[in-house]
Image 1 (cartoon, rainbow, N blue to C red):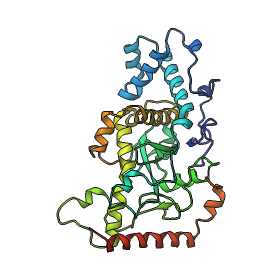
Image 2: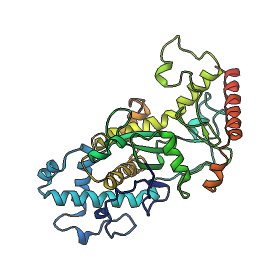
Image 3: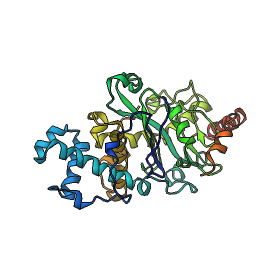
Length: 346
């Protein structure tokens, strides 16, 4: 299962494919501005083309149902879903990128349980499984731990529930740690945190500089802390509780994404390349809505906790620093944070 190439137009967003699965029919000669050429839209205007795409991803309707709804042929519906998804992918470098990796987020500053302990945190990382379609001979590769045909999507988000990096296309059988290592080895796309800053990751990832993981074999997830008699019993548990409190932003972001776009729970039988484009397009729309629709009901529900959790240096140089000494250093840093939290617990 070797990684292939990423979309040539992406910057802080990658799509990943595997050898022998490229769909050359999807590679139209379009511009790279994210616009749709109206001259190519025979009998279908831009607004209707976008409506066809939004109906497909927002209601997870099969193409024949969409054909009936819009009174167009199956070929026309498929063509416009492809055009809009590719146009949105070209907007990804503008909409999926870090905004500020140097200052402390107000969510941390205004929370005495998080500040000053986690003041250098700049975001959270996690993987999520989305529905996929694959030929029968590749089902084993795409079959996830849930025994379903899925793809593993790695994402980074900030504490405004905005995605800042996406890597889509890995088979569902790949674990999150392997997908992250692929992202780190790519040619400059991954938004490395500045020196002294870090992302929050879960226990499925390695705890090393730039990536702060919780303690294993200790309670972690929010549900584990519900109840009057479930207070932390030591510095490790207190650290895990506050780590989970902040890292929950990525879980809520995934909850909004999947709640809004049901196609991520039931992907039609598109080619692998088309599926990657659609997944990335959904992430782009998520960020656009976050920027432009402040009263959006999905984000309001996420802020209230109503969504259940979903389960810039030289990369080669930074990966080379992931030695045992670097891992030990990050573990010492985590221990210091945990002890400080415990000594000043409220």
